[in-house]
Image 1 (cartoon, one colour):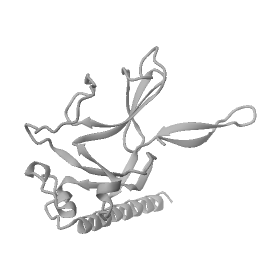
Image 2: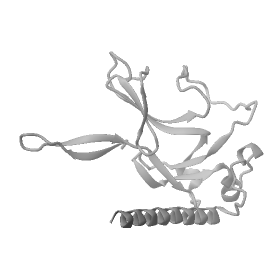
Image 3: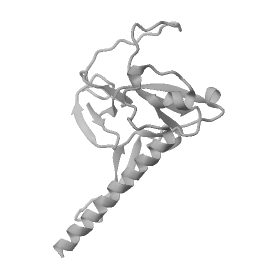
Image 4: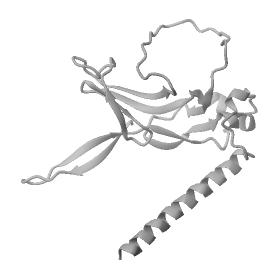
Length: 206
């Protein structure tokens, strides 16, 4: 589901009535630390371009874009079903907003025969997402969707990656496990520092 329901108690002169407020959220991947044996048979692979991931929702004649945390980034009119006047329905897209490119771009969709072409240049990408074929789109994190940064592909999948897609590799990077351990350690340290600051602020007020 794209939608997370939040109960809200409204203040009224009569007996209170519970209403549901809709909050849109994205599906989030987990780090693909363990490569499954059935990767080739039961998993789908998607290359993620460089950019900003957003959730685009067009309904009630307006289009709203949300960030990864479910916060509204901006509103606009669009030609998606539900996103303009005299247009019914609803459109929901898990979308990558290209970095340093306009948001509104016209596009033409065609059905083409399956074929293989050589790209004139290698396009940069952030990483690769792995979807289990039996997974459903639900908000929040799920182990059925995995993520590997581009610079992790040689290590985990023994795939050669061009230098253009290795530039984001941390300078002191050793391996994925060490990187995630250090990342969690820094996150915990920041959390403890924030908690300590809040405690000290409370003591000053008292």
